[in-house]
Length: 54
Image 1 (cartoon, helix red, strand yellow):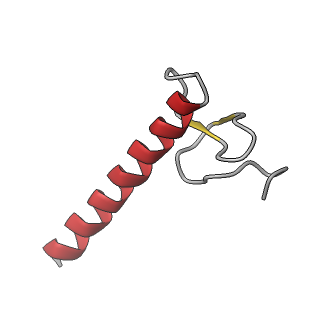
Image 2 (tube, rainbow, N blue to C red):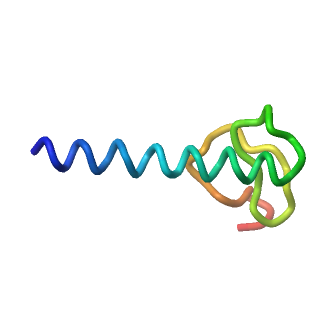
C-alpha cells in the first residue's frame, strides 16, 4: 500500500517536472505547462498537448 502511494506521488512529480520543462523550452519558465506541439500555455501539468493539437 505504501509503495503504491509512493509510486503515484513520484509519477505525479515526474509529470510536473516534464510540464515545467516544456514551458521553459517554449520560452516561458513562469508557466506551469506548455503544449508539446504548438507551445501554447496549459493550465494543468496533466496533459502534453492542447485541445487543438490533440
